[in-house]
Image 1: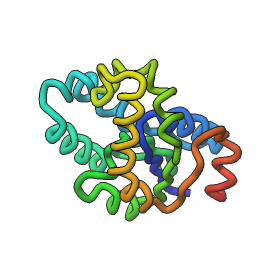
Image 2 (image 1 turned 90 degrees about the vertical axis):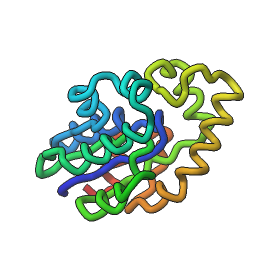
Image 3 (image 1 turned 60 degrees about the vertical axis):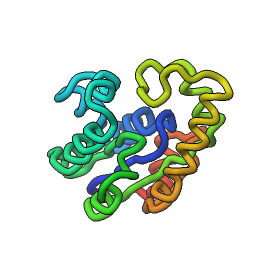
Image 4 (image 1 turned 60 degrees about the horizontal axis):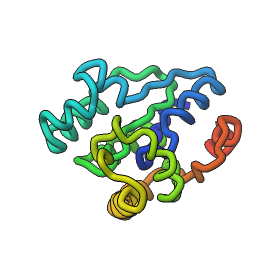
Length: 166
């Protein structure tokens, strides 16, 4: 199996589905956001203190320097595939799976989790939906370079394993 990198916009379920899939397949699971926070503190605090450019650089280094289990599901940050050569690196080291979720579904999921998300803080309702739609439009060309694109709504570990042919 080797490595499977889950990509997609924040709130699409990379961590939730990644954990469930790893458990279903009895393989390792790595959440790169959790690894980042263990080493650097909360992402929102780091982002606010050092800015997005420094955060993205650190995130890229973390992607490439983390010691992954031989077979694992890797949950990435939502912006990670967009910066530097991260997408190419992931494709060279495993399979990249885009969990595609419509902006309205993401907005509904994010309405309660905004304080943890530096890019979403202080946005509500229509403003939140507009921001997500715009960011998703910018990131979509990168996300679509994935090895496999999966509908992330109503996804189960069994269904995902079947789509991945694992």
